[in-house]
Length: 165
Ligand SMILES: CC(C)(COP(=O)(O)OP(=O)(O)OC[C@H]1O[C@@H](n2cnc3c(N)ncnc32)[C@H](O)[C@@H]1OP(=O)(O)O)[C@@H](O)C(=O)NCCC(=O)NCCS
Image 1 (cartoon, rainbow, N blue to C red):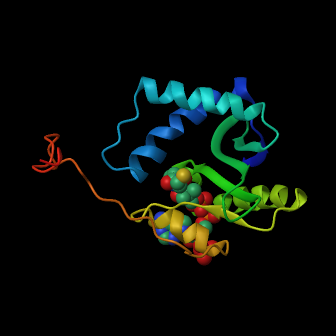
Image 2 (image 1 turned 180 degrees about the horizontal axis):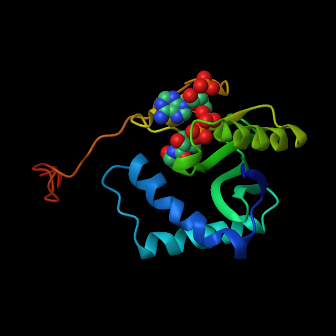
Image 3 (image 1 turned 180 degrees about the vertical axis):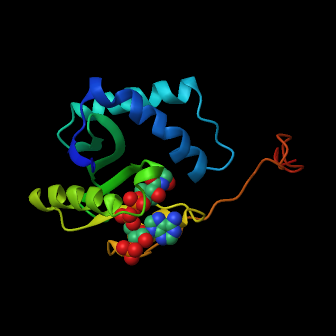
């Protein structure tokens, strides 16, 4: 049966949502290894979110099997008093490219709208074309670029003149 969207339930959905994090994080942050410690930190934040009125979680439910997830939050930035931020989205492989990602985002946007929020935002990894296609389809546009540089080749030795003598 086709999945339906319902609210996240900690006891029913926690294990499935934790399993989704392997693909979400390892795909979007190459080199990152999702391990027990990562999952326990994530689980703690997830549980806190269920008690926080500024955060909402939904799942895709296929006859009792959790097969998708979205985590949204109302956040404040230096620029915007309140932004609807989509932290995490996942659709199980067998249900991809059938519009469920769009349905999950539309659900979060309805909540943002009901809270009077005027802007929604999210982050996308450069290599994640499926996520970018979904976000563009939903009307999101690139407004800033995050630039990073690896510093692993820089030694820990003090620079020659660091002591100023
Ligand atoms: C990103 C993700 C949530 C998309 O979910 P989805 O249910 O497949 O998305 P939809 O079916 O609603 O697709 C939305 C649009 O994106 C396009 N799209 C989806 N996957 C695509 C892909 N792999 N390549 C190109 N376009 C793609 C769809 O064609 C659709 O556009 P259209 O309506 O013009 O055809 C899903 O691929 C996923 O869970 N990926 C792993 C987790 C992840 O990386 N999450 C994002 C970071 S948190």
